[in-house]
Length: 339
Ligand code: SAH
Ligand code: AVI
Image (tube, rainbow, N blue to C red; front, side):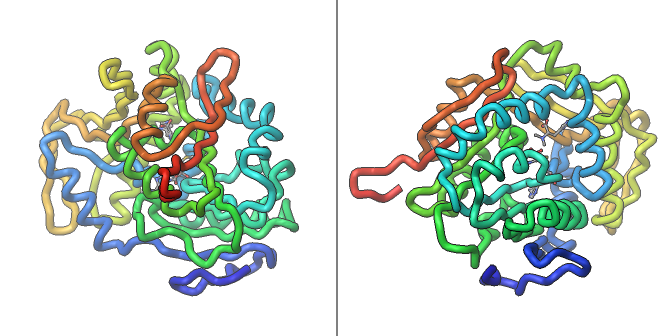
């Protein structure tokens, strides 16, 4: 496979010959500044991308297997049952790009029908991404795997140097739901720039449903989601020279019915001061750090988002209970043929 038009792809040791790895991860200094400014706001917040170090990625994998967490098994079922239809939308020999690829489990459900020219998993969790890419390349020796460690929200991180051909962005898991609607529109619009004229986006979206089902999915009995939430502080201790004590915080997740979103917070159990490098952050007892939104959509609200981003929904697939959905999006063309 050709190299990227950025830093040269580095061959990882002991890897099969059909995988390359590129590291476009932002510098530590920039990340620390972003984290500190979120914690200096009136409602303290941390970007959910900081959940995902190796431990966070493993905890997320455990979440996907919990009985309460319906999204993963439901989306898998939709992908399995409709792989052929989806492959027809995407076309064979496409370059399949997955922002936030995690374990790359779901793409396995499509590969045999799709036979892509290349698969480009992109993730912020570098070590987890490498292992997942190597494992996939070993299982599918015919597949070119071009793994990129990057923050997918950074527009300039468009993967370059990929093989020619139609580009399809595979964005399952309702990861779009972790962005506010306005951010989701900008993100989708930017993805549109990655597509060639005939490209498309195959995207998984979680649906609005009863508060009981939603809140159970983010408050599992085994407490894995709580560990996942608290792990964001451990990760920040490593990357921002901080001294969060996770025992001072408790997990809190609830459905905000007005905003159609699950909110995850970490609530301070005591008054205390946290240090991040030279900066001190005061936490009062009962005050929270907002760590994640997970927006749930109706067919209408998702249609609005895609239209605002310049896309049309060509096909949609649901499970019987309409818990989850997968959609194939194409860019809307104007009369002069431009997007
Ligand atoms: N696509 C997989 C994993 C979804 S979990 C699935 O559907 O099962 C979300 C994934 O996105 C995680 O692997 C996380 O590491 C990654 N991620 C989250 N924010 C990111 C960002 N800003 N840039 C790159 N990867 C990100
Ligand atoms: C990755 N993302 C779509 C998951 C979600 O459901 O919003 C992350 C997650 N947070 C708690 N549980 C799972």
